[in-house]
Each structure stands twice: as structure tokens, then as C-alpha cells.
Length: 394
Image 1 (tube, rainbow, N blue to C red):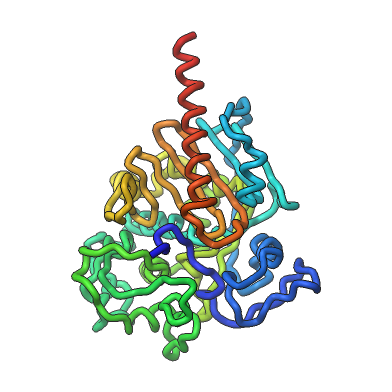
Image 2: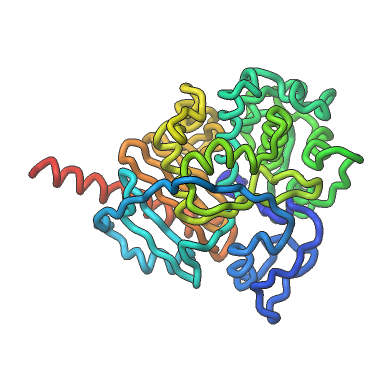
């Protein structure tokens, strides 16, 4: 049951043979049929910054004025950040506080112009597009049944499931997200042959049985975030990439264009695999921190973020929960997380955004690098508090 902190194995869900990335040396050919969990560290280092060479992608266009990030004084953090980054194998780490850069560092030959894969950090982007679609009137209510928007799901276990239950991963539909089990749903999904003319996600998910009444049981399911993506594109009539560009990427002022990896039937893999610049992941954090405004307009309904970023489902971990595709902490902070060290941590009380990209030695490691990252978040919070208390005494 380590799936709770995990992002998804992107290429396992992407399906199809992988092209040889141009950036990989001849000594490290990518296996044609294995997923990312079985690549060498060397292969991952090269591939995570070049996902567009692996499979088909859609572009998330940027444009207009770039949202400026001011330079703040370096934050006095109690840990050795160079040693931390090396141990985490971070390619990039940025800390914004009150909209200003308080720390920014790159490694592993990566830099501010490069893009890096998000893995499951994308889930929080997808969830925000549901909010935009509600605000725009494409989705009438979170209490609507999912099958009302995705006709292919009619007659399946998803007939009982609301949009809200999909967002909180409490559908009660049976799913196994064990990345090490070749017969888990996450693995079988990749080998599934979709019904003719049907999206692969819908084709697979409509076959799943129910294991608990809808709304009663939380299970981390990447397949359901993929379904949320189908919901948004079905409701809006737009691709996720163009809708993200229209609602957030362009009006908020992202610096670089991003890409979104496509699954076998040509739809963005909504549970995974945006690839963007580190600063733009941080800007997405600022968008959320600012209440979901972009270009002077409210992109999300007024009641969206208070629900999305607070515990909606219990995940059997003290002090933590799950919102609308965000991991929540009882101190009011919350995070988007992906395997191998991708993350956006947001703390509204301290106006703090921490974005990281990297290639951990293993996909998930809650007791090791995962815990170390949590410790870093606490150290940064403490540094902000110490500074505030220092200012208040002077």
C-alpha cells in the first residue's frame, strides 16, 4: 500500500513502443517494452527532460506578458541545501516566498530553460481544469454523475459515481495501483486493446467492478484522474492542452510552452506527464496561492480551492488527507506530488511555494528521500517563521 505517495508510471500508462530519445547515449538504449520503473537511473536522467522524444505530445501554448518573479534575499535555511539536493538527485529546486525567489538552484546539467516531466503533479493541474469547466458552465455540478458527461461509461460501475467522488478518489470502484505487480490495473491498462473508436481510459475503466459503495472508500487511482481528463475534454469540447493554455498558461503568464504526453488513443494522460519549466511549476503554485486568478479574471469558482486543497478523504495517515487531487496537511499546507521526486508544495499561511524536479534513486521512498523532502519543507517553514519573528521584534 505504498501507492498513496506515488505518482504514476507514465509510460506504462502511455502505451505503445517508445522511440529512442535523441538525448540518450548509445550505451543506454531505452528498452522498447519496459516502463519507466525498469529503466536505469542514467536512462531516466536523460528521458525525464526529453519526454517529447519518447511519445506523441500536445503543446500547451504560452503567450503574452510573462508573470515576473522578483528576486528576494536568500532564505536562511537550517539544512545544507547543496547536500540535500545531491541526495535527492534534484535537477532543480525553487522556493518562492511572497512571490519572490528566495532560493533557486539547478543541477545534473539541467537549467531554467529546460523542461522536466511532472509525473502525478499533473493531477492537480487536471483537477483545476475541472474547476475551470464548472466556472465556465461546461460542468453543471460536482454532484452530477460522471456517466452524464462520458456516455461510454453508461451501464458501468461509474453510473453511481459523481464528479466529486472522482476528484477525491472515493468512487468505490476496484483498482490496483501496485507498480511492481505486472497484473495490477496500472499494468493491465497498458496492455488493454481499446474498443474501436473509444478512448482507452473509458474502454478499460468501464469494465472495473465495484468494491465499496461510492463515496465510502479512498483508493489512489491514476486511471480515475485519466477519466477526469476525459470528463473535462468531453464537457468542454477542447483538448486538455488547449484548455489549460486558454485558462491558465497564457493568461497567468507562464514563461515557456509546456507539453502534455498523449496516450495511445490520442488523449492527454490526465493523471500524469506534463513537462514544463521549473519556474512555471512554481508559477502554477502562485496561481493557486492567489486564489485561482489569471489575467485579472477568476478562473475557478469561489468555493473551489477551499474544498480542493483541504482534506475531503481520509487516507489513514495522521495529519494528512486528500482533497481534489491535492495531498493535504492539517496545518493548511498542501502539495502536488509525482514519483521520482516531482513536487509543488504550497503553504498559504507563509505565502510559500516550493517546486522540485528530480530523479530519486527509486520511484517512491516514503521513509527515505520522501521523508527527507518533508523535513526540507518543515525547515523552510521554520526559516520563514524565524524571519517573521525577527522582523516583528525590530
